[in-house]
Image 1 (cartoon, rainbow, N blue to C red):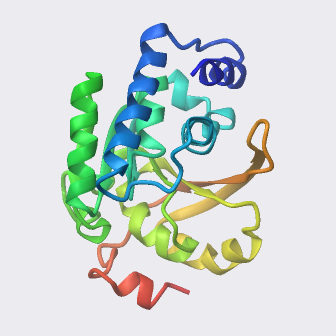
Image 2: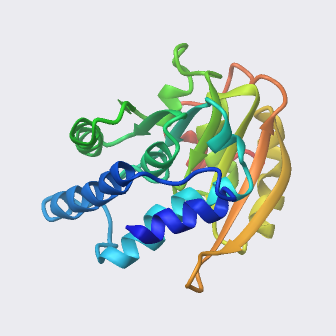
Length: 240
């Protein structure tokens, strides 16, 4: 796990140096993930070095371009978190964050709760569909930052995620490197939902040929009350 410490030290210009306890938390998280993966489908990536690079470091890479994540006490929700990426690694590395993990599959949420208890890490784990969570008064427009590595095109993902962001906050989807066409198709949806695409940052994960893009979407006005639409609608009829 020393590779994670080196990476975090590098991307924060030495402002954050992971403790031995944090490295132990990453190590325990890895073992819990691999063990649980034997009985339920959490990830296709299980080799130690691959998990470190493709899950842990990939989750943390956003801090290169968004230092608020390690400098401020922000409320962050990870929508469609799955096995906890990117929310869990962000919380371990940057304990200043107030992190909520949100997923539609209850079995995954139970795994996340058990992991949080084992690691003694305060995160909130919520089971539900994004369309329902986005209409929940306790969650709607309640977060400084919304992140997601979920696989969906920009128009669909924006409808799932933008309702959670505060006005003035950010929605930051983790995307692949070839996203120009997707951004062009999703720009109108982002605007309808109260967002404005500010910039896109690209990088190659260290020691690999894996490309990652981060789209920084600022919430500039409240999401109209008619969104998100009822479950299933966004994927069947994307905003355009």
